[in-house]
Length: 295
Image (cartoon, rainbow, N blue to C red):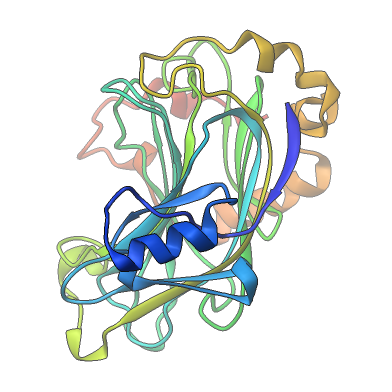
């Protein structure tokens, strides 16, 4: 287990062409690889800045080489400016298999002058449908802001600029949806016209393409565990054993502190746009995890 600072830098995929070979030669010492559309990804500042683009031919994205079990994963993003209706930028962690675990940040594009919505989702045993949406209290396209996942044996916390916007506490009631396998780190930009902005009423205006999201520097302070990257979930005993030796596994990280609780309450009371827990059309019976307090 080690603390690692990764730049948002990419290696080549195994597709053999001149462009991919150039990427391989330049990025083969870094910890991320292109998932698709390498021609829509640009790297600047010796690998410190990466731009992902979406045009009418394709979206683009990248993924970590390694998987991680517990830790803190942070990424700085500057989102698509102007009319970004229908565009989705995603930053997420996901395991493998039909019963995979997944934690999602999805940034839903907006029409010019309207606020971005941030959607979070949690998959447990391969099942999602646990969306929450909040308005961001700043313009995420004006400059870089940080987004992070804190994950230990007690809680998962989604944070925006260190402000908690969602908390999942590990209890008997939430165990079925709590992450239980190593997960890789992903980022991508893609066409979500069918649902992302006003339920799909506002589509992408392709005359504004390409749509570009920029990212800087990953801080990946987490336990690397590639033991089941292609198999079914299993418990990571090594990462569990070493929790207490890292700040994200310490007693202080097992629950939000008083300052974080105040900020979390403000977001939930003033910026929450949608919560699956209160959507009685989708869930006539309140999901059991919705009855669990965040601390």
